[in-house]
Image (cartoon, rainbow, N blue to C red):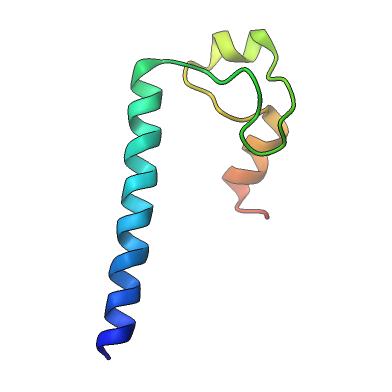
Length: 68
């Protein structure tokens, strides 16, 4: 049982660190110039409209819908 709990705690810690790093990024309002998932250029209009964006529109939609 300890092994399962250890793995769950490790996964939770990784999730928390990722969430905190994204939160800090969005607070600084820095947008990526290229999508973190596909590498395509994020249009300037999107970067200005959505402060702190890190994905293009298509990849953001996939992320929000939980698609791979």
